[in-house]
Image 1 (cartoon, rainbow, N blue to C red):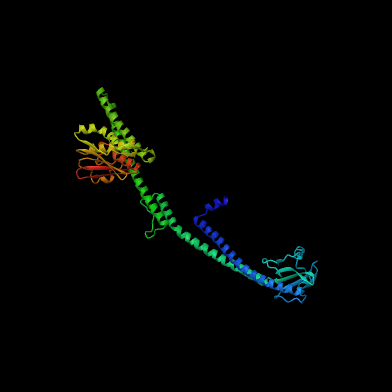
Image 2: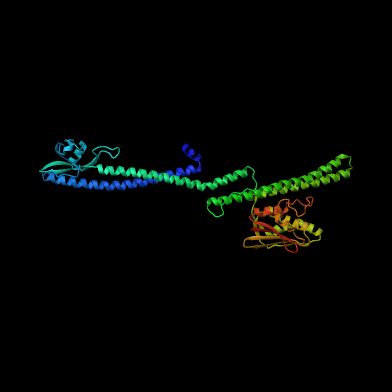
Length: 453
């Protein structure tokens, strides 16, 4: 665990180089082991063939009680009786037994023995490979031992090991260097992005990451994503600053009016009627503050679709519930309010859809002229609900920001309304996975909700 934590603290380039080095070490060890095994097998096979041939010639000579033939250069021979006494031995052995008591006993009982004398590493003198078998000569059991020297075989294997170690070391160094250079080259854009992000964190404005336009790899896509995120963050920050400024102004206006009314009322004695008028004016401004606060809270709540409770609702009932509060307003203004919606059911949250439609009707009655029409069509699983009027339309310069918070077509902030109606409509549409847009029709304006249903 400590080693794991220690590795995680290392720089990414270092971890990548270590990973390449470890992986290449395993690969090179496996490849070297395979080469060594193949060469060793071939050399052992050749040595065993020579030893078997030499052993066979000795067995035949002992069986025929003929002189023992010479073997390969440096070979040794030894003939023993069943009790292990040396009957014949090469001069270099000086009657030294080549077999251990256990091996002597095994061969005497018919087993064949083959083993090596001396090791490959460290280097030892007189390395041998011996083989012993039982032979019958003139009715007597004889143990024939043949041995050949392994010097050339061991030397070849040691040379092979040295070459494999040298080649593996060079390959590992080269692979690590290439891995290091590749990792540095791959992570260089990331470091550049980090430096750019650090500049942004220090307060730099309108800074974007330098992303190559002629590439389309993972790092480049990351750069584009980060730039897109920076665009969104800058736009969000700008909206936040504008929202704070607008909200401060909107809240300041009714508070200032309330303070002025109260100051006047307290400045000199007032009659009961005057105090009543003052309280009514203050009550109006308090209600305006309450409406503004509720609208802001609703917008904040709609920022998450988790607050939606979707259910099947008759579109006609939803439209009628939204239109009913505005019919008397339309009658007082001498205007018509028509509804044309299909008899169908939709899936949505009526708690939010009804006031959103009501806001569209209120805007049309307040700022438009003539007949106000609420129409809806359902096509391919989507609901398109529109509210139109016959007024002068929406000023073209205002259209792009019609759904912004506190946005008003009139320059004066003392005009009727808070500028949150269409922002609320837009938030309801987004929460339902839809869109809202406004346009001028040539004989009025139209605001449309496009929602999945």
